[in-house]
Structures are given as structure tokens and as C-alpha cells.
Image (tube, rainbow, N blue to C red; front, side, top):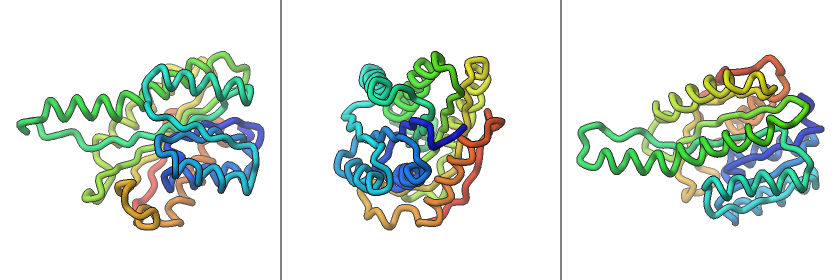
Length: 229
């Protein structure tokens, strides 16, 4: 796929990884729809992207429910005419211990906050992309906000890998490819930005996203990036 002629939705665009991908794709000439629920960081990413390429717009979302996500995709389609790429960010945490006193409540909360929005973004993207005459790509990206954990949680890696393979099989006939990138260790957003992920790591992730988009045979597979902080 030619990135310079593509429209890409980048979720979680206010965090360092999302921003790195956005800047990289802006330098390649892509049209960007930047999405985040952190309005301050989202505006910073937009300003940085527009210094490189003015074909960018920010979409602040307070809630990642199905109605809001469908509205987002409709707005992007109306504004830019198409949606070729989705960077779909999973920000899950580890599943609670089975015998924990609050395990059921904790599990339900994780599914509602992390899995639901991730799945909805994938579903809505596929619904819009299936009507396009050209190939489209969904890239699932695993992030962790567990700053005490040395690795991306096993759950995040497993969920992202499993959904990537399942979606790739389901969407192949619709000319939609699906790839994934794991693991990444990302500290809590409330920490100072420079302490989260180092610049070489950000660059590696951005180039991995580019590789998946450019490689038309990449489908249903995962790329692993070494953790670096």
C-alpha cells in the first residue's frame, strides 16, 4: 500500500508511541485523523504533525463507545473521502488472579474499559473499509500502563495476537489485512512523557507500522519489538 496516498486513523495519538507513528506517517505524506481522549496531548501531536504535513486533523473523544466511534469514522470519511489504515491501540492490563476477592469485578472492569473499545474500533473500521475498492489495513498495537510490570502483560499480548489472527481470517475476502505489534512497555500517562519510552523504541514501532502497511502480503501475523525504557 502506498502510504502517501492513504488516510490513517491513529488512536491514542497523544501518547509517545502514537505521536511517533503520526509524525512518521506525516513525513511520508499520509493524511492523518488523530484520535485521543487526552485533549492536551492530542493538540500537541496535531501541531507537530502539521509542521511536517498539514493534511492532519484531531478528533477528541471523551468516550470510546460504539456510537462515538461510529460517528468518528463517519466524520473522517466525510472529511477525507476514505479510511485506509487504522492503528488500533490496546491498553489492557493483566487479568486478575482467579481467587482474588474482587476478581470478577476487576475482570468485568478490564473487559469494559479495554477490550470493548479495542474490539469496537476494529469492528467499525471493518464495516467502513469493506465498501472500499482498494486494500485496507488494521494494525493492532499492544500497550501497557502497568508501570510496575517489566513486560507487556501476557493477557494483552494474547488478546492482541488472537484477535489479529481471527480478524485477518475473517476479513481477508474483503481485501482488509490485519497485523499486530507486541510487546511494548508503557508507563502510566500521568508520568513525565520522556520517562515512558525512549526515542529509539518509538522510532522502531513507527517503522514496524510502516512495514506492515507497505507489505501487501503481511496478514494475520505479529511483529515483536523489544522493550526499552
